[in-house]
Image (tube, helix red, strand yellow):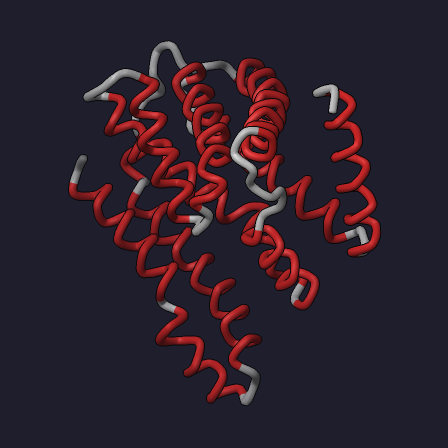
Amino acid sequence: MTKRYWWVIIAYIIMQFSGILFAPVLAAVFSISINEAATYWTIISFILGLIAVLILMKPDMQRPMHRDASSIGGIVLWSVLGLFMAYFSQGIAAMIEIELLGIDPGSENTQLIMDITRATPLFMIIPMFIAPILEEIIFRKIIFGSLYKKMNFFFAALLSSFIFGIIHGEPLHILIYASMGFVFAFLYVKTKRIIVPIIVHMALNSLVVLVQYNLSPEDLERMMKQLEEMQMILIGG
């Protein structure tokens, strides 16, 4: 891994933890609650983090494309296919977690993001746009890409997806994060274009955010019950 890539990872870590120092400062300066300050600082830090990472990755963006890289048509095709692949893999992983491992459905991370988004709608730009770009650059291009040079696809995708899940703070749902990581890594290898997993990741997050943002908690609960009933029918429960 090049020194520049390490700086990208360091910038990402600083971005994630900078709120510990700067959120209280923001709260004091603007006389707002610490929760509001933390939300606004997260938005600021993610924007600054994205700018820093894109500047650091500029040499990569200026390199000639791989000779086997997908065309524009290929990007569109694999982005659409990739979205279906991601949903399918998530569904299989969720079924395994619930039926075989006894893990309760639902994501605390997603719920927290939606709670913040409902309070501050501007926050949705992070899960919908900024986070997918940063995460695909770091976890697929840098971490997976570096591992893939030293081992086969399965183990490179497995390790990078494990780190991906740990960073999200949901070890119980490692299988779901790993399933997404495998799909994103496959798309990156297949197309030789990091933009493809970025697009799929954006689309996946955006659909979740927009659907949940426009539904009441009661509607969500009713949908979850309907999905559970459908699952019971499909597996013969």
